[in-house]
Image 1 (cartoon, rainbow over the protein chains, first blue to last red):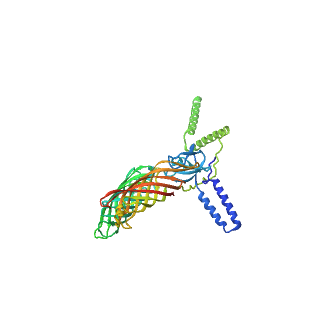
Image 2: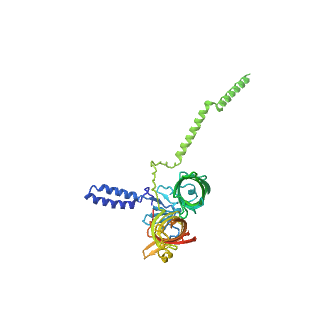
Image 3: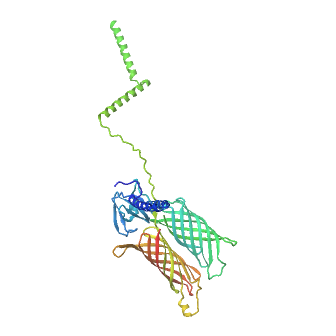
Length: 272
Length: 241
C-alpha cells in the first residue's frame, strides 16, 4: 500500500461524514436554519477525528493490551501499514491500525515509524537528552527549616535549559511552631548537560506561622520572605533526578529584627 | 663563386624557415586564443562524435511539484490521574470512621508515579471517654482528622482480570511511600505513609482503586509520646487526563 499524504484516516472520516451529512439532510427538510449548526457539528467532529498517522517501517509493530511491559502482545501491524496515534501515556502510545484494532505500542518501537512524508516520527523520550533540555519539572521532598521538619513540593518551568522559574509550596512542623510557605523564584542550572550540576536559586514568597497549641505565643502571623540558595541536581534514571539544596531565608517580620532561617532539603523530581 | 652564392642563399632561406616556424611555436599572446580555439573545436568534435556513437541516458525531468508540508497533530498526553475515594480510617485510640479522600497522580514512567492524597475523617471516642461517662478529650473541631501526603509509587504485577468469557480488564498492584502531615486535635504533625493498592481499568481512562495505607505519626495526646499507626482503607475511582 502506498503511503497517502493525508494525515487523517480517510475511511473513518468518510463514515462519520456520511452519517453526519445524512443527519444534516434530514434536518434541512424540516428546519433550514438548523443546517448551519449541523455543519458546524460536522466540522467539529472532523477536527476531533484528526489524528496523527504514522507508517510502520520496521518488519512489524507489536501492540500490547496495556501500557506496560507486563501486558501481553495481542496484535502486530505489518510493515507499510499505518496506525493512528490516539494518545500517549508515559512511554506507550495508544494506536489504532487500519483494521480498527486498538492497542498500546512501545515508544521505542514508535520511534522507528515514519510520518506520511517519510520523515521520522520524533517525540520527547525520557532520557539524558531530555534531562538537559525539558519544559517542566515536578518534585517532592523533605528537609529541615530552621529546626522544623519540612515537607515540600515544587514545580518549575524552563525559560531556557539554564534558567527556570519555580514555585515551591511547603509545610514545616516544628516544636514551637508550624506553618506553611509559598515561594516563587528563579533557578539557575549552571551546566545543564552535566549529569551532576550545581544550581543557584533566588526568590521571594510568604510564610504563615502558627504557634503550637501547647505553647503560649502571639497569634498566627503572615510575613514576607526572601531567599538565596545553592545546591546540586543529579540525574538518576529515565525521567528522574535528585535535587538537594540549601536556602538562606530572611523573613521580614513586623518586629524590629528580621528573622534569618536556614533550610536544607532533598527532593526527588521528574522532568517532562 | 657560384657555389658560394648558392650556399648563402640556402643558409638564409633555412634561417628564415627556422625563424618563422619558431615564431609560430612560441607562445605569443596573439597565438594563445588561437590555440584555445583549436583545443575547443577538437573537444567539441570529440563530443559530437561520442554523442553520435553511444546512446546517452534519458534526461532527468525535474518534477514541478512542491513538497507538501505536513502539520502533525498534537498528541494527547494522558499521564495525569485524578479521582475521589471513600473508605475507612482507623485512628489509633479513636476508633474507625468514614474517610473521604481526593487523589492526584502523575505517571512519570510505566513503573513509577507521584501521588498526592488529601483526605478527611472524624475521630470517634476513645475507650477512656466511653467508660468515663461525661469526659470529652477533644472538642468537635479537634476531632476532625485532616491529612495529606506526597508519595512515590511503584507499579508491579501488571496483568489482566477476566470477568466472564468476553471481558478482560487491565489491572496492577502498586506500592506507595511518602511523607505528609495530619491536622488533628489542634495540632499539625509530620506523617510517614506507606501502603499498597490494586488498580483495575475498565477502560483506558477510568480506574478503580482499592488501597490500604498506614499513616504513622508521633502523638502525645494521651500523656506520653508514642508512635501511632492509622490505617486507611480506600475505594476510589480515578480518571486519566
